[in-house]
Image (cartoon, rainbow, N blue to C red):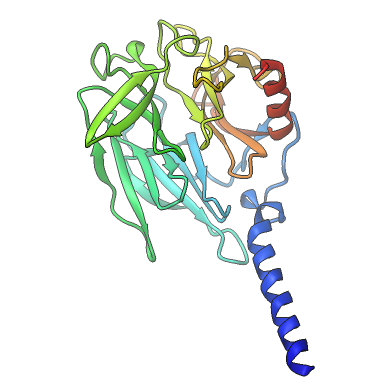
Length: 300
């Protein structure tokens, strides 16, 4: 009987431990321990991330929520002095930010969390691999005559990026389209997603869900790069719905909006917004309920 009791206690402790790991996203320490936003966007981690320059672009949380990666820079449209920083949760508290990689930005984790893809200064893609001691030194994995911007992997192995593989040179951003990037027998195939996602101007700022069910894009871009956030859902025939605005609360006034990202628990949208580098900040907003409404409205 004592053995049965001890076994029962052991099972309970094991289950509690598993639940604690599983439910970290629901704990007060999730998302850097910040007070969570409602349906009105708020500045994300105000005063906690920028010790010099600005923070901007796409961020990334690990699947378990205990690692956070983000880009820092000195100025807009100038990659000099930029890089990627990390914050980690040590089991008790979030540690101070540290520089992970210099001159590489816009981190994107693979669905299994074992790879990190980053953008280089010449529209190339770098990769670091997770080890027991952290991350390997990044190496270039894709450096083409065309650009690959905001490179993102998905569960299927297909990757997405802003690219101009079919026109122009990598410095001509007006020719970039939202594209699929597929590797077949060692060869790379870049395909524009076409209409209704792409326009005659720059189409490159995107977030695609790991299961490829939806994509959030920067749309309605002006000649001076102000834009709004729209969403498109993938249909059963693998085409995409007409993009819909995320609404006036998020798209409130002319501003640059980019670096869109949805947390692994699917609750929050994080993005960069600013009218200039002086007021550029990372924002976040509750997103799961809005996502349901937008999907219903799209008819998908």
